[in-house]
Image (tube, rainbow, N blue to C red; front, side, top):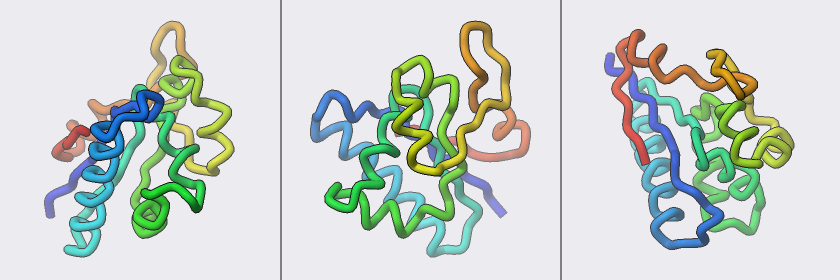
Length: 125
């Protein structure tokens, strides 16, 4: 069975429709693969680590979709959240902070190469 990792890099702080569109497309694809009972995981990386604190809010337009795929969220890149000032908000969501690969100057990041080694296809938004 094909395994897919969907990575959200888009930045909500720009307030653009494009950033929201990228997030929604990432979550739509996650939902589609989930409904097909395929192995899929969603990861927030880079400036995308700012999204979780927004989409857990019930008034956010992506909240309902997020709730539908919450069980497919692999986590939030911890070192990325630190670098981009999103750690406090990200930690408040209860989503796992991933710090599996040591990188100088960070508290550790999500190791995308691990997913490739495990045969995942990566899709980025």
